[in-house]
Length: 202
Image (cartoon, rainbow, N blue to C red):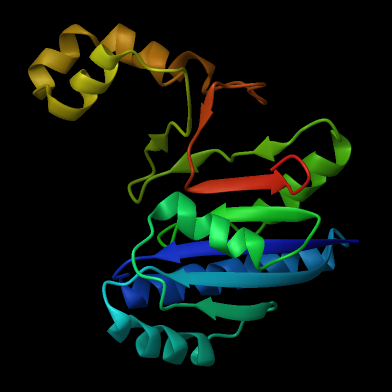
C-alpha cells in the first residue's frame, strides 16, 4: 500500500475540461485503491495564472469536484513555467510515487493501477509513460529519441508536403517502429503530459 502525490500545472485552463480530467482521475484513483495498490493520494494544483483572478475559479472547481485525494491549490507565484510549477508541487508533497499530469489528459480507469503495478513489479524502473491516443483515437508518441535540430525544424516549421519527404526520419524520432511493443525500455525522452515516477528516482 503506497502513497501518491499528483501535480497538475495550469495556465488559463479550460475549466470544464479540467473538471472532466479530475473526474477521470478520481475513477483511476478509486480503481487503484480497490486493487490495493494505493493507500493515500495528495493532489497539488499549481495555478500559474495569468494573474491572480484564476485562484477563485479554480478554488470553486475544486470545491465541487469529488476526488479521493487531499487537495492543495498553490497560487500567487506568477507564471513560473511548466517545469518550475511541478517542482513547486514536488517540494510541497510527499509520497512513494509522483504523477506529473497535464490539465487536459483523460485517464482510463485502470491507467494508474497499471502504472503502479508495473513500478511494483520492476523496482529498478524510475518512470513509466502510458500508451496514449488523441481525441480521435490516433496514437500519440510520448516516447522519442533525442532530436537533431533538423528534426525539430521539420516538425515545427516545415509544411506537410516537405515533412512527407522526411517521414522515415520523423518516424525514427518518434519511435513509431516500437508502437506495437508491449514495453519500450529506456527511451531517450518521455513526454511530460503523464509521467508516473518513483519519487526517490525523481
